[in-house]
Amino acid sequence: MSELISKYVTCPKCEQQSTVELMCSINTAAEPRARELVFDEDFFRWKCKKCGFQTKLLHPLLYNDIQNKFMVYYIPKVERSRIADEKLEKEFSVLADVKKRIVPDVNAMKEKILLLEKHYHDAAVELSKLAVSEVVGKSTGQTVHEGYCTEIDRSENVIGFQFFIGSDRRSYLQTTRFDVYNRSLSIVKEYFPDLDKHTGFLNIDHSWAKEALRRYKNAE
Image (cartoon, rainbow, N blue to C red; front, side):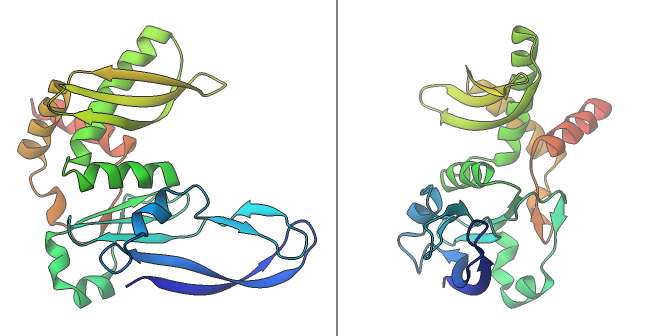
C-alpha cells in the first residue's frame, strides 16, 4: 500500500510554517495512479497556502511494481552504490526475486521504471549508454554529462539516448542499433550473473558501468 508521512515545512518566501503530507512509498497494485503520479511533473511540487510561493519538495520515494517484479528507491543525490534494508528483506522474503534499484534524481527514476516495466536489463542499458556517450564525446568534442535512455525498440532495432553536453549542458539526442544493447546484455549475463542475487538496492549507473567495463576488459 502507499505510505504517507507528515513533515513541517517553512515557506522560503513568507516563512509561514505548515504541515504537509508526503507520499514516500507507492505500490502500483494498490494505487492504480501510482505511475501517473510519478511521471507527473507536479508530484513533488508544493505551494504555500499563505503566499502562493511554489517549489519542489524532493524527498525519498519507494516505487514498488509487484507485477513486473521491481522496486525503484529514489533518494535525492544519493551517492552510495548499495543500500541494504534488512528490515524490508526479512519482512518480504519474495524480494529475493525482485530487482531493487536506488537512483539519485527524478529523471533516473523515470528511466528505471520505463526500462524495468518493459523487462529490459538496466545494467545492459547503462553499458550501452556508456559506449554511445564516448562516441558522442568524440564526435562533438564536448564533455558529456548525464544521459538517459529515451527510446528502446527491439523490433525497430534501435536504442536512443538523450545526453547533456558542453558547459551549457545542452540536450543532444543519439540513437544506435539495438545490437549494442544485445552485446552489452551478453556481457552482463556472462560476467555479472549474480547481479540481482544480492540483497539491498543497487545503484546501476554511469559509475557502475565504467567499473563493469574495466572488469570486463581485464578479464579478456
